[in-house]
Length: 102
Image 1: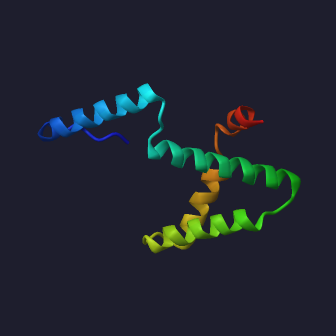
Image 2 (image 1 turned 135 degrees about the vertical axis):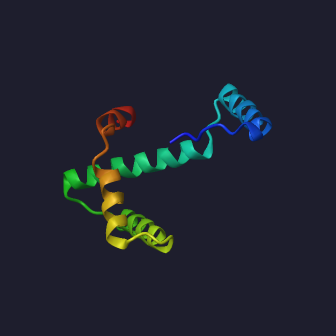
Image 3 (image 1 turned 30 degrees about the horizontal axis):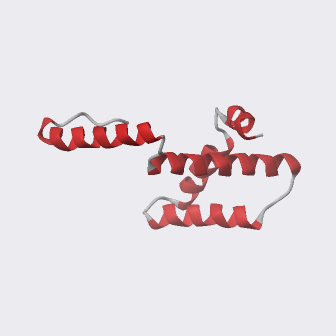
């Protein structure tokens, strides 16, 4: 959720906007875009594996580490696992993502 602009930070906000405009001009992604792409890729792989009934030790390790990281940050283990799987398995854009890479 976007934050309400704080006029005391206008100078910093404007600098950030210029920086982001420069990135867009170079077609260079921000870190958050890379994070979203990784989550989308994991979702696609997980979905493909579920369709075929196959498994992947590497993907299972990534998911287990994700759960452990959330738990280490104070989140409930079961709630973290539930959120993680719902985020990966029930994406509204999954079909679109798959078309983009298939």
